[in-house]
Image 1 (tube, one colour):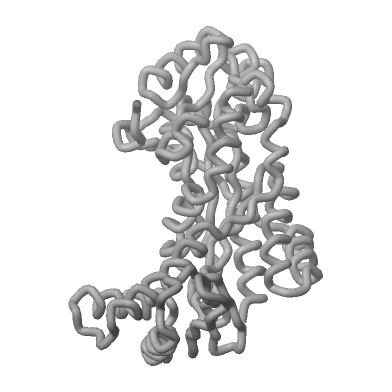
Image 2 (cartoon, rainbow, N blue to C red; image 1 turned 30 degrees about the vertical axis):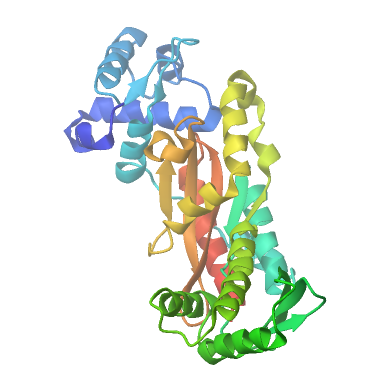
Length: 351
């Protein structure tokens, strides 16, 4: 598989080759179909015969910039060719006031932040014609209290209280022979270590203490602490952290001839944890990121691209990532500013 690093810089191509390459890529992005020499010659702008154009197309194919699908005599860009185009030739569209207004109006009208997160994914889907994705901020609330309340001989309620006053609880199985003092000891131990920490931070510290034998807990209370922490860890891993809207947009007319690719993409979207991991990789970026087809292992088979951008709270801290996923023929020049605007608009709503 050709990598962009294996290709010559776009500046090393002749002016004629650059222009033909640009027209093939833009034609493919516009139609989703390979572009042939007759189509390129027909508009007259190149002032070249179909034979001359075919010769340049063959050269571009030999360089790994273009490929010829077996179903067509035309050419389309390879993933590596698209990367060269995006990085070196693409002219990003200037966002219009109308686009900015649409995005801000829909997010502002959504209401609470939770609804705005859902609306952001819907906005991206509607405007891009692809699927919109929003990675929801992790719950990192600092906690103040932990209690184990007996329900009956074999179960107890593990209760967490956050600094904001929010309360969450889970049912934990306990040993019927356990003395009530074990529940109290475990509750006091955890509460003492929660002050000013998130659950993840407190859990790491407590597990290290227990593992090193430095805690003052007896065996029964240690078991209860482990159970109480485990029930939250499991729940956090199973919570959906990714909102996806508009997956049906991926089933467009061009997809009919490539239905297996679309099926693979929809399967990828079902695996939300993997998609979330990809978006997480964009958290540290200061600008919108573009992942093209086989560049990313997750979408190597489905041949899809992701455009993603982090969004920030009022203190300029990254709290999540949003983006668009679709076929590699996404209109990158139009979607990049769209994703960037949505990230900025959403960030203004997060305090």
